Length: 421
Image 1 (cartoon, rainbow, N blue to C red):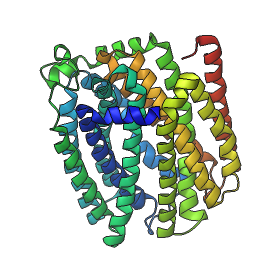
Image 2 (cartoon, rainbow, N blue to C red):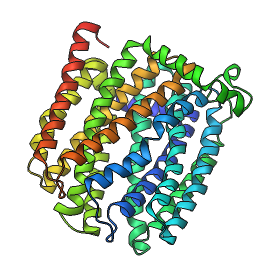
Image 3 (cartoon, helix red, strand yellow):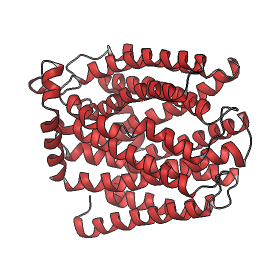
């Protein structure tokens, strides 16, 4: 089977394995940390969570990266990416320990959010850097397969981290602080794993690395503008980013709906958190299926064709499975949307990496990251306006299906008039 053969070749590449190890440890820590946040913010018995409260939390945690993102991209194109993984994960380990102390102290929500914001801020550098570094450890012919394996494996690691968080909560008497400390330990392991690669391996090239922070920050505005101009000249990259942003919007709106269904419509308290865990696991299974299918599908259908199939399938299956608002079909919907969303992301990653020069990849992936965050927060805001307290909203389900159908129609038109990418 070609996929299995390519996978074996990739795993023989020492530096690819080492970069993958950093991703797996880092994103498993993200999964642990995110479950702790969800448990503390959404499922605490003393908190009466609403769609508006969830949207506000997402805005506080994600929107600031619309400002941080451009700086992250410019710095990633000037700082050695190995060092970003090392110091970024060390910093997150320390900050996560601070979050655990704040949970134990029962501080006001704004102080807790400030701490969580600090941890996730560093995440923007690490995740963008991992995507930008991938072409440095694999050849162009296997980039699609690498993008199928690496980000998807990272997402599965985050899912596994979420499972670990649930297990820790059972052992530690529902202690969110203990869960956060486990995440801090994994961040530390990710930092140590990055030391197995040389400082120069992951780029950028030495002549692009500025000698200090001041020099890098001084060129931020000019560098980001250069990155946007570079993106403007890469039509395929622009197009797939636009399509992926629409699909991310849909995924974000449905995430808020499932949170509310788990919290109120289907059960109470810890039972709701367990159901959320099942939904996350089903979505993770969809991610894995996307990793297996996408290299073959892109080879047969092209990048645009596969994105049309993904968006079109979601447009049909999402209302069919979601409108009953019952746990079993909704878990099936989680699998379908995990598959289609991750498949579209793998395709987008590959197109962007292939179309964008290495000197600009950090900036473009930071733009990508900003689009992800804005789309997700915008979706949460729309969901907050539409959703009733128990999360059952046919209007939201239909709206999301329409957006998926629009994405499929737009990409289909690009395929017809703009080539067969």
